[in-house]
Every structure is written in structure tokens, then in C-alpha cells.
View 1 (cartoon, one colour):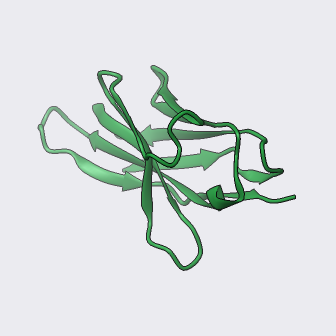
View 2 (cartoon, helix red, strand yellow):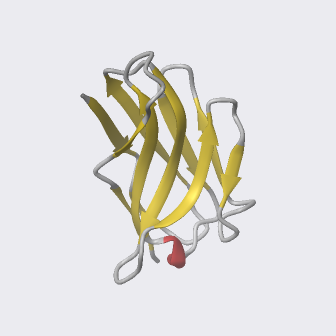
Length: 120
């Protein structure tokens, strides 16, 4: 089995910053891609940022220039969020596409989510 555990959410004032982390553990052969998604109350879940195993990144237009995604060699992905706005308030979810063996089939895994609230 594979587990994703997020951390780093919280309450922050507009203009502030938070660093979210997501650690993958369990039966992992390789991680093809990792990413962050968010869901605000009454809205659909949306992509925030993704990063491939080669380090290529992709961002939603609404966060470009403010958020930075990165990953380390220990199966952890980070999301540095700067210049936060009230519209960034949401539950942030980590997603990973993981191979659990040399079999090339890979599967989606999601974390439980971490709440980010931007308010004065």
C-alpha cells in the first residue's frame, strides 16, 4: 500500500506564506509525478501545480508567480505559497502517480488534505 501525508496548512493573513509538504511512503518503486490540488467550499477540486519525475512543472494561472512546487529525493513534494490571498482558502490535496513494482502500470494516490485559510 501507499500513503500520502500532507502537513503545513493553517491560518495566515493576506500576503503571508505557508509551506505545504506531502510525504509518500509504502510500496513505492518509482513516482512518475506529484502535484497539489485544492477544493474551496462549494467548488470543484482544481489543479494548483504539478511536477514530473524529470522536474518539469506546471501551474494554474491563478497561482503563477506566487506558488512554487518542488520535490526531494525522499518522495516528498512541497508547495511554497507566497502572497496568499483570501481566494486561496481551500483544502489542499496532494496527488501522486506511483508505480509499486517494475510493472509499468502506475496508479493515482491522494492524501487526506490540509486546510489553508487566508483571512485577516
